[in-house]
Image (cartoon, rainbow, N blue to C red):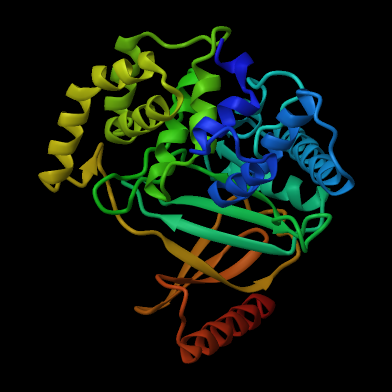
Length: 358
């Protein structure tokens, strides 16, 4: 009922606007809430028979083209290896026909680093990539990697870069009390819902999240039972965030069943809050720690024999991350000492000389 009822009236309510306000005001509020939420507003307006002007019609066209582009990239990734999608197309498939779910990035999860680089190589072959960003998250067994590939959108002055993130872990945590959790739930509905809750570690919830939740709990969706939901929230350390998300949505959409479900999570919320307050930052041997970032030093021609990255510890304060497609300097912050950068470049040159002398 709710999913099929994504209407202009509902959007006014979710964005906290009186219905007497203009559609232009609704669109402005949508832009303030989320950069891509206007795409949904425009598609709902179109669905309700509102004639779009040339600018808004082209914005909606670009949004649909962007979504189709991500589906193309997802197909290429699946040809390279087994991947799981975090939200994105998985949630978009649940929306009523014709409506455009706000599209940001394409987030993919793979089982290990070997598959990660196969997928990254497929992305690089398919389209030009302007930036490659790498994050390394320590874990109990081996570090996890997140690789982000981006390029300008078709209209770079108006639209965000096209971006694909491929990672060997599903949930990164908050780097303080919640460690990374590598795997997604086996059930896609649960993985979509928990991925929305995980977003709370990066930002406040918005109307876009509430709409996703309403779609997930629509009448045609395979909603998990309460016992499974509580157990999953416990297992993935997300009960407080999930409860907040459900309450946020319930308050804005007058959805009593979601408010009741949030209350069902109260025991799991208490358990997770106690764990965090006790300073237990390690779960299953993985400790919540901040990631290190790969400051790009140079792109390299594909190293076909490399299936994994290599860490080269040149000095206590100088670690190089050498990958099949990029060499980088591992750093903790955005600001890097120029002297350290020059030392890293010199170390790479030395490694090249050593490799050439063999």
